Amino acid sequence: MKRNLAILGGAGGIGRALTLRAKTEGWRVTVLDLPASLAAHTVPDEVASVEIDISDPASVTSAFKTLGPLDGFVNLAGFMSPHRALANTPLEVFDDVMTGNLRGAFLAAQAALPLLIQMRGAMVNVASGLGAHARPGFGPYAAAKAGMISLTKTLALEAAPHVRVNAVGPSAVDTAFLRGGEGRARNDTLPIDLNAMATATPLGRIATTDDVVGPILFLLGADSAFMTGQVLWINGGGYMP
Image 1 (cartoon, one colour):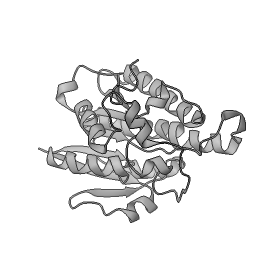
Image 2 (cartoon, one colour):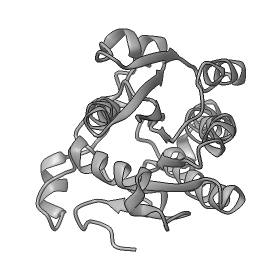
Image 3 (cartoon, helix red, strand yellow):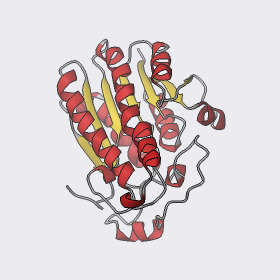
Image 4 (cartoon, one colour):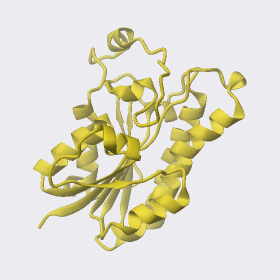
């Protein structure tokens, strides 16, 4: 019998790779994303799609009401702000990043948990290495992802033993996300020198979507049945907490 998986932000680069891989491993996948993102990327056959705006609580509630019991839920939604020192960051930019990342993760978790409890399922939040390994210029995003990691650990305690809640913390992944995200009409180019980053990484390259998909599926599956409240760092050895 197929297991049911909902992927929030599933129309993005990692989400599309995760959808295809999950299908091959026997998951029935539903992708939730912004209308613009869903319109820009064709959803594969046998994959359902649901429009959602995680900045709008009513939209989150409405979207999750269309889903049945879930065996797995992955939150990939999020975006970066332009590279800027915190001292020069406007309040509206800070609030926007917090809403689209941390507040959205909170709303999505609240909506997904009752569906996961029915199946004793697993939740995976996609955080970031910046949530623990702070770098200058990424303050709002780093703070939001640090909050997501804390949210993950608290949810893991409160949802146990019925639902496992874990996270992955990737470094930069070679997708359109490096330009600020998909589906938001953003044109910001972040000052990331991918060649320099690859050279500074022990494994000699930056992450690909497949590097992130594998750990996510591991955390969703039976091989991680005794793991909850954990963060898997995916960075080629660039950060070792």
